[in-house]
Length: 214
Image 1 (cartoon, helix red, strand yellow):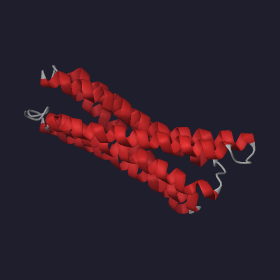
Image 2 (image 1 turned 90 degrees about the vertical axis):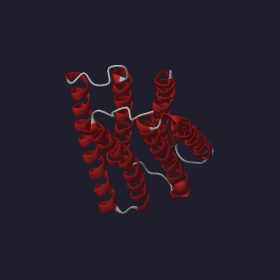
Image 3 (image 1 turned 60 degrees about the vertical axis):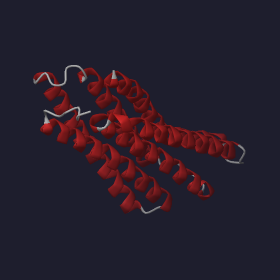
Image 4 (image 1 turned 180 degrees about the vertical axis):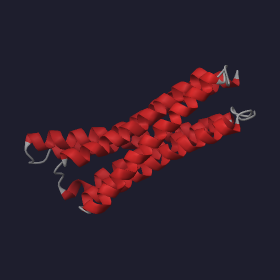
């Protein structure tokens, strides 16, 4: 099966750029969380700035792709699916940006014994996003390969859920004040939600792949 954008190389390149920004945002997200726990403020702020830049540039690319899809009447049989994919993938980047913005503003006090768990959780969420991006690339160029990548998205999303739940149990069994427990739980949920957003995209992509094969 030929590329979804076989007649529009410029559009395919923009889509690649958009997906590159999505993938990079998850990697920078991990670095930002790591530096937050390390207490390396300058590096943390540098990663935060990168995330803001990536989110802004991804928004611009998304609007350009959407405009081109509408004005040039491209891939009419798949346009709605691609637009929905763009919107839901953008939600992933927004979740990354929103979470790291909350870290920067609220500065949660998280005891060091939970550092490894938080980094593990962030890594699983990042892997879910990475595999989501690869599944979208497959959808565009090689739909037969989508299923393998979707399986990996679901795997890492489940690992993120399990890690978040285990961390939450440890936190609420500790002697920390209830307000601090709730604050830490909020950040667990925010990081875990990055993987959830990737799973949302995967669910849609599974349906779109079936439609494209018919």
